[in-house]
Image (cartoon, rainbow over all chains, first blue to last red; front, top):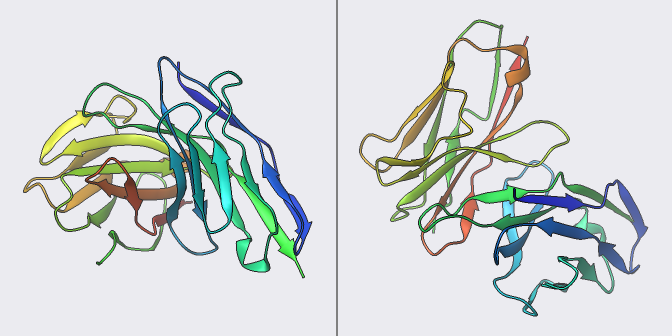
Length: 114
Length: 111
């Protein structure tokens, strides 16, 4: 079946530190991969996505590359800010035409301290 | 562009009571989803609508949960009767171009 495994948190970093949140997946075929972010008190927001192998998604200084050979989609940022404190969810989309289902990981809470 | 709207934002009920949640998707989005997010877990799909038809409800506990989208726009999700383990955040999302946009969620606490 389809599943997403995320690095467990919480993760605490100092401002300007390098961030990596690991994500690996299991899926049949070729899923699309996503990172969603949930800021305190807000709903889930799409951060970035990649729809095929070797694609790199990027947004707000965050990047993730779709690695088919390692079934991974690790999230990285070179220099985190306090405002990046949030919960990050890795997700995959796979399904029959029209299904468009998202399978989420358990989330990783990031806290950035000044 | 207005986002996905949900109400209420918070609800506290006792077990065996019933509760309903409302969702208004982004205008023009044909696909609507309801997710359940239990504390410490990722969201889990409960049901997906395409216009007013159900595409996938395989994860919906149909003995107590029901959902409808009668006119293909707004949707309601109902739980009757509620159990303690239904305490969670219920998220509504809509999509048009294969990217899903989420509402703020309804936080349900069952006592």
